[in-house]
Every structure is written in structure tokens, then in C-alpha cells.
Length: 68
Image 1 (cartoon, rainbow, N blue to C red):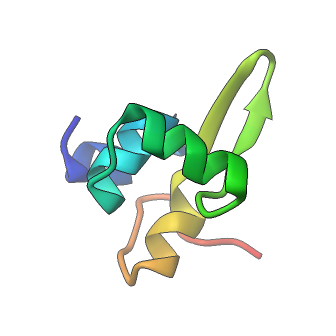
Image 2: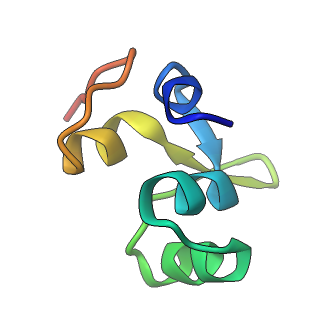
């Protein structure tokens, strides 16, 4: 997944968010999510990262914009 593809989606998997936005590996990304360093939401049994707030925190603009 590229950064442009990620910014065009409302949510992305934790490993993708860690790799694209912070240069983290899979385990480090899940550890950061568990510690609250990466904001996550639970959808069913999946944990995903909302892109808009993460992009806004880093000064990027997502297709969906930051709300709240």
C-alpha cells in the first residue's frame, strides 16, 4: 500500500499504518497501538487505524478529512 492509497481510505490495518506513517514493523506497530501511540478502533474482531486523525496529526490531508 502506498501513502496515497492509504490517504484515500477511511481506515487501514495497524501494520500498514505503522509502516507507512512511522517506519515500524508489524510487531512494533501493534505495540504502539496497544500503548495508545497509534489511535485505533475495533470493528468486529478487527483493529484498524482511522486515517483522517492520523494524517491530521502528521500534517497530511486525507480524502475524508479530520473530524472532531
